[in-house]
Image (cartoon, rainbow, N blue to C red):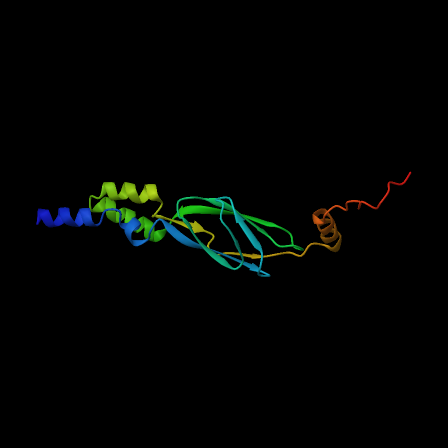
Length: 149
């Protein structure tokens, strides 16, 4: 009987790491679609998109689309209900090593908000014109042009 309990404790250690994994799909949606997404962890995509990211790391998402106000959102890493249950199971069954692994890898956490849904606001006509002129290439005089005096 004691051997059975010991085997169960060892086999169930790091339950969340095994059952949930250390990464999760993070989804970004925008209205309108086709916005550029840049995350502080270096990942990029174009909406709508889903990226596999570590559960344990919080990050910042920047969403840009020409003609629209840019949006920035903070994504938090929080203890999830399922992750908390797995962590408690580790502690109850004596899997302190497993509990430590789950906590260290972030398997007990989840990213919020997920999915991240944003509605982009169109720029005002004056702001759109200013943004367009700021990104337009500067004119360079051609070889045939002579400076005016």
